[in-house]
Image 1 (cartoon, rainbow, N blue to C red):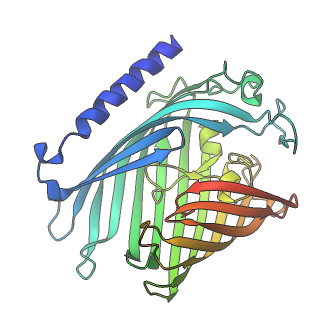
Image 2: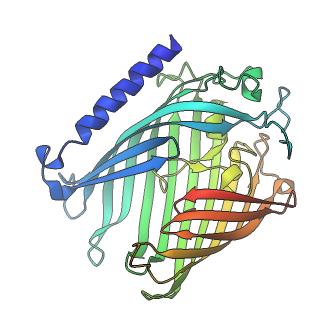
Length: 360
């Protein structure tokens, strides 16, 4: 029954994707539509945005929707007694499990302040509905710790939420030099009550998120550009039941249609989804260097030096600075296809990771 339900949802997703991928001109003015297609390792995300039909004079109104799905590997780093599970350096990591998921969202961004010099809203209100269906595929990894727990969402389920937030965008991007300058700030609330058809996952929570991004350019040129990037995030969850996927991620709008990786993954060199919590804070500092474009290949070589830090509550509802995590490393790649070499100070170990796109 579960497999049949997943098949029907995936079929509906495929049909909607085909419909939405039809020529944009068939639905309206092609100049007002923006389409983005992102690839996961085993999956995809399709995002449509349209600016038009303004609700108020002097500012833009945008409408957007997303559809996505994939087969991914997630982690649940808790023993049956809820103590933290430490994965072995060699051998089977019992935290890992397979996850088949589909996600969708629909919403709008309403301008509150307009910046005529940039030709866009500088301050916006965001409101959208987000849904996801997860099948944790217990037959694929029956030994995973998640399936030994008594959590309502241990096998997956449907999760729906309403997102509302304010976003200030003062970041300018130089596409010729691959550099950025300015600040981005946002604050948001995500509501996922049990009454919003969340019985199958047990979700019943509220999430608060605050995010600050900053970029300072030191050198800007087509032959060489150097700039500093900084991200600071605070994320807090509360409610009667908070699903595993929410505990292991950070909210906010800056990575739409995705949620930001939690401390596991947000702090590079740490296993993805590790160090879950109800309260999390994350800081990423990067020095990004872009070299001359390889014209024959059409790519830009990149070099990134970074330092990451994060702290969490370990499910105690209170940040504990004894749980401070830190790492540092170097990223090398071309056109945002990067290999990170990270040193995780807490466990004194080095690791490598392949990434599609910059960290933030």
